[in-house]
Image (cartoon, rainbow, N blue to C red; front, side, top):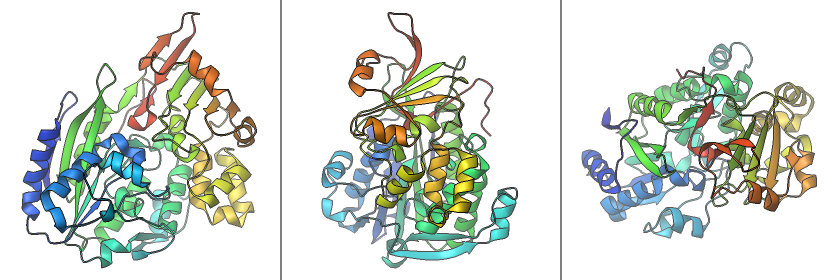
Length: 424
């Protein structure tokens, strides 16, 4: 049942309105004695999940038993990050998710279903795994909080992805990412229905009905001056809640460029983007807009590594961003990559497939490191002087020497696409 469905392409929902709408929904669960909040980490800082989680704490107080950031394979949040994103929520409530242990398998999606969804490309079963706190923590309410926005793995982020991937295990994360990558990012991004979502929806319907999950979903938009506003709030325990949010996100978060830019410049906020594992959203979210033979310049002052997991980092350094066909060969040739399909998927996602150049300008990685994985390199200081994020405006810009570029201030906030792209 959908409890709240508020929003529109020009809507501006204030913090006080967020609180009021949330509290009216939570009144349906006022008797809950042990509540678990499952919000995102710093990679979704602008989701307003921090504000909503604080409101949950204000509402339930000591009945909020724990906060489990849905980090998936990301590093655990630091105390400083928790204070920044979740001000006022007690530090002692936060738990660390580990995608390699402390898991419960709810059930297994059969291989023949995955084969059907992938149109014969893959044939493996899929384990629906979650952090055991969801199943064994005695929770009578689980609030999954986050933002619906175009996503490279699952078309539209959040809903049950927050549960099965954000608090999921190695098998579920690796195989879901690989399914999306092999099926094709361009066939998935910006679309609510796709093979990966179908797998997760199967798991929700067949294995997770006993979990008392309620979804609290935002849609975030950008004003003309670059400021962020809440365009939508959707609260409920069913698919309808998600699909309503996804419909609005398709209107708000898809930017159709007037023409394919020859040069795109993307800025990665150092508080959010510390690795190419996350920073490659600069590639994922712009690849459907940039012109053939064009260049993507990634200003990445906070990027200090490749993977947010030591093993993933090692695999990226070893094999590089070499494209779909080559990664398929490598998976067949190397067991270590076959055992880490999430990393294999990431290598596919991070390649331009030779269609355009990627020039990374990292704050904390060397030229040798960047070039070893298949990217071009440029000095960050020099490029920040030429392409100053504080002076550029979103969209097309013209420099004093006549160079034209298209600027994206935060790739996590949307998807940039050619004029003829249509979300489904």
